Length: 511
Image (cartoon, rainbow, N blue to C red; front, side):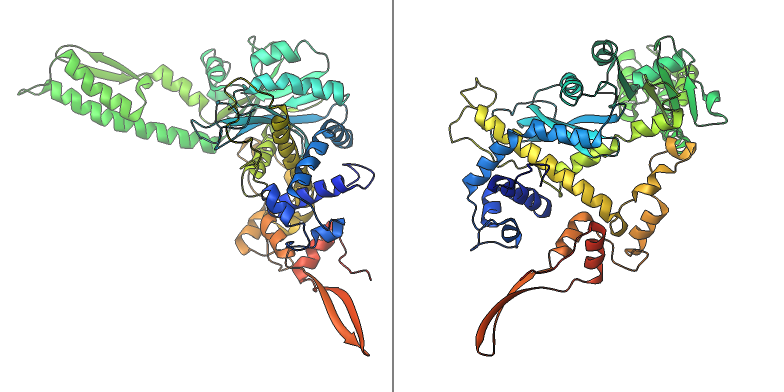
């Protein structure tokens, strides 16, 4: 609570109530308000926070109050979790709207695969471990890379950190951003990856060759195309083999049908003739299997022949299971395996977005609408700044809720279907290159559905539901002719007590 505001206040209590409610069961602001009122409450949350009543309007006013403190709160989080030289993860996502009344909403690239719907874009900044630090909302048609500059400025100016290593995917930290943002600013380093087309060029230049991976799956490279950078090529042999098998199957399936066309042009009776007719048949086969780039095709009026492009196939084989990490960080600071692991830590951002948008926090639907007939976002604005702020505040509230959930999940990991933090750091070079695997302990929990203490294993949500069965009972009775009222909390189960111990919480009543 002190992180939001040191001094206790009604608005702070309402914000805390909304954070808790969002973690336990995300609802509209109206439903949340009803859950806090004495006559309609469904938990003791309002009693614990000293809220006997809260209206829907009060919740919205508290959101306005919270948004005014967003910068201050983010500064506190940065001071608590970041320092000079820290690794910072950054990525963006989007969430769509069913209606047309949000002034920030616009049409853009939908990561929800919801074409034709208005959306907003929001960027999330996290620590290397996945702890959220800051969030910012952008209009729905904002390009991913266009958001990066503001985040760099935020970290340097507001957070006061001049030396930071930014970790972003290949769509975020592009060559343009490197030239315009990173190369021109002292103290900014980055870790990202090459695009497929860039890797292909390295293979064509023979910078990347299959022979490099005879003894190891991780190789540091140098290329004149990337001066002053470290390139770390990683080859996943399992994925490489799977790609090779699939490609060969497609090649053979294509050749089988192409052979039928060759036979049709060579038969004595009713032979297939005419370059246009032959080309039409060949085109259908090529389009079906999508491996035409691997074949030389020769079509005449009366014949058809083909052959495999061995040189192209050789380049493709060199790319199987291959990805290349690029970074400006010196090897003395971050060696090759650590660099690969750093890039793969972006999965923490993906996990945060999943929590935002799915069953955990449910950032949508966003229950903040203008009156009927208000101007849609794609038309000129008519004083909708207040509405924009409500949406920004809602997304920030989601981030604070995820901040709490993230910390609670870390503490509760032994009884969740999750890897425990200490297990994730002990990776060999081979394990770093390969797709992330769950630890033996996590796999055991998933298989047995039990912990080593024989307690049932839960997801975070189901564990919260289980803890929700602990009830506060108000008991009225008579003793020696006197009316006595007291409170009694139900006795915790072994699992519930384990969870409370992990969280460092004692449940008791005070009279």
